[in-house]
Length: 195
Image (cartoon, rainbow, N blue to C red; front, side, top):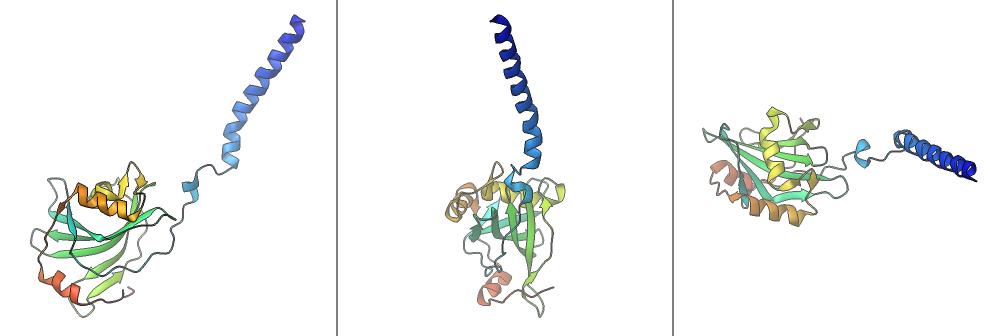
């Protein structure tokens, strides 16, 4: 009787050990991570450039630019997890730059879709073909600050567009940008020009 119990116990331990060791192999065969093969969905056209509800993003003291996000342009795509927005940058000399960008919170990566050209005959949005960039890199410090100020929380995107917009308004101060280039951009809406 005791011998039979010992064999049963060995059999149970062997089955348990086999199950535990094969789980790692099984995880390699079955895709258990949905972000492993993540693909971005259709990218909408850039929204019109405005600065009506612009918020200032806190930047490190060494930064020479002022960064803002137009809250009205913030969009959360539930299908691909990308939060898209328009950001306006102003250098110490007063010169402006504007970009239509997106951030994928789960991978903490960002991408620029278009740049707004303020001067010249091709004033308006110009598409940019850019790959996704790791926001932990030093060159992405302003995009990282934007992501952390309302788009992402602990690598999770805001649950919806209204929540992301509310977070940006709550977490950041308003920026009343009065600039002739922004005023001129408000009066014209132009489709993006391919590069």
